[in-house]
Structure formats: C-alpha cells, structure tokens
Image 1: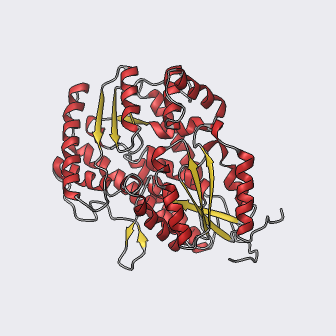
Image 2: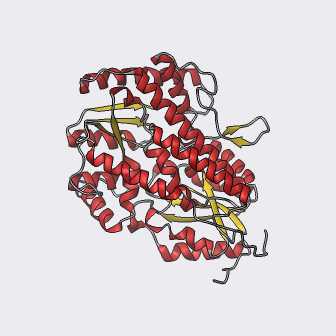
Image 3: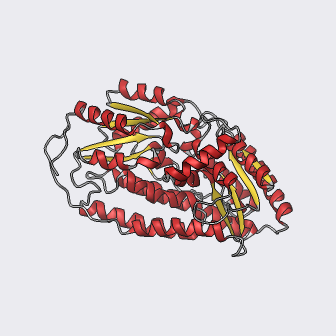
Length: 437
C-alpha cells in the first residue's frame, strides 16, 4: 500500500455537461413523445431497445433508470413506495419497481405532468422481477404487453440454441408490434439502431479500460453520470457521437496524467447499485485519498469486456467488426441476439456466482485495485445474488473486502451513520487516515 501523499493534476471533464444535457433531453422526450408524433414504449433498461426501431420514431421509457432517478428525491420516492405498498405489493420487492409503480399509481411523472401512457410495453425477462413488473404496467395502463424470455444459463454453453430461441422471439415481437401499432416494419432502421447500440456499448467498454491508468481519469460518481447515456439512448446516433467524444477526452486525460481524484493513493471497486440518495459516500472516501475506479455493475450494465490477444480485458468488437453479415432481418436479429447472450450483466449475475467472481478477480488485478466494497443491496435480488460467494472468493485471494447493508432506492433501509463508521474502520484496516483539508 502506498502511504506517501502525492497530488495529481486534475480538471473538470468537458463531456460531463453533455451527458447531463442528453439525460435531461431524454426525459423530456418521454414526456413529449406523443406530441412529437413518436411511439412511447416502456420496458426494462436491458430490454432489446433497438428492436422497435423498424416502426419509426420512438422513445423507449426505461423502468430502472427512472426508478433510480426517483430514489434521489427521498420525499417523492417515499410517496411512491408507499403508494405501491398501499396496493399490497411487498416491501421486499425490487425498489426500482416500487418507485416506478408508485409514480404510475399516483399518476405523477417526476419531471412534470401526468405519468406517460405507453403505446405498448416490451420487456426482456432475465430477472425474476422484470417480466411481472412490466406485465402489471401493461394491465394498469391498458397497454399491449409483449415479453421476451432471455435464455439465461452457463456462459458459453448452448450458445447456438440460445441464439435461435432469442431470434425466434424477436421475429414474433416484430409481427406483434406491426399488429398493435398498424405500422410497417423497416429493416434498414433496425440495422441502424442495432449498430448504434453495439457501437455505444463498445465505446463505453473502451472508455472504462482507460481507468486502468494510474491515476484513474474517472471515478465512480462521474462514471454513473456518463454510463447512463449508454443505457437510455444507446440505439440513437447521438449516443455514439457522445461516446466517441468522451473516449477521446478520457484518452487525452490519461496521456496528460489527469486524475479524477487529485490525492489518489488507494484504488477501490464497489459492487451492485449504490444508494442513489447517498452518493456522498464516494466523496467521503476521497477524504482518505481513495478513488473508486468502477465496478462490475457500472462497467457491464452498458458495456462488455472480452479477452484480448495479449490476455488482458478489452472492449469487444461490434458485429460489423467481427464480419457478421447484417444484410437481412435474420442476419441483424442473429447478431443482436448473440450480442445480448454475451453481456456479462446477464450471463454472469444471473447464472452461477463463480463466473462473476472470476471476472471480479480479473478486474481487481487489471485495474490495480487495493480493495472491494460490497453494497448488500436489499433493493435488487438480481445484483445481490451470490454476493457473499463473491466476497469469499476475493478474501481467499487476499483482497480486502468491506460490506455494508442498504437499499439502492428505498431510503428507509439505509443507515448513513453506520455506513460511514464501517468505511472509517475499513480505511483504518488499509492503513489510511484522512488527509488534511
């Protein structure tokens, strides 16, 4: 552990403002979709959001980011979760879902006006919550619902069968979408949207790899602001353009030795979604000279990593770069299905814990991490799956680990003072003390 205090040069990230603008524009587009003559579709953030592109202009209103946004306002979030519980939905269900449902039941859109009514609902079901979440939305909002079943299982096994299964369902979805909207489907628009999504994801993966540098050019709070565009708008050309600009800026920060945390002397990773209403915990750790350089969650929700020829982890190639044909609808859907099957957020978190453990060990090594913090998140059954097995694998490898309990989106289940005390104790175990102001 490095104990000397070195101060790196730092400067604001120019792309930060653009990320904020694109996010704000997205939620305005959700509210104004009908007025703009666009379809409004709702579903989960990891749904196949490029699939409706063949219908023409649309906005895909994603449930989890909206639930996370609400959670950053504890007063409104409190009203939402209570509205969901008043409908007899259990408190231990997905916190994002309860925020989203509560907003819908209250008929209050967080960004002003009534809750937006979708033209239809489309959901990729790989989590035990998601399918029923959006089925309830369809029933309550009187909107047609289509569910796609994600073939979750051991990574790398039965890939061809999974691709065929997913492709078949996407073909069914296209026929269904044409029927419920009365619109003709354009394969050229699908191709463009799939290319945008894959390119956005690959660019994000390239960006997080620059965080291997010492000092790290980005820290976790910045990452959370930057990665959301790859979640909300990844099927749009605007997303690709944003990440190309961000990639170039981060690359230059590395070349110039620009740090996200000027006093970086310890590098940590964390796990699962954070308590969105208390992102101050990252700022608090900076008082110790800690830079949280990312996580399995923030790297892989929008991106993916694969092994490079030199054995390191790097950004995957897009279907075009791999030489996959993208001429016919079947070509496009096959490439899209394979892209999703390989996504670590789906193939590792919802399979067997040791796959995630193996990846976390590689992240710790290549991103030069000194310890890992686990948020034992009661608000998400999926990201909490196997966390204690992951913790055990890290500790057996000699990596310091800290855990704290909470809920990503329900403020009632988080103890701020206790969490800060645990951080203080963990820092002390790492040989760190607070730096002078």
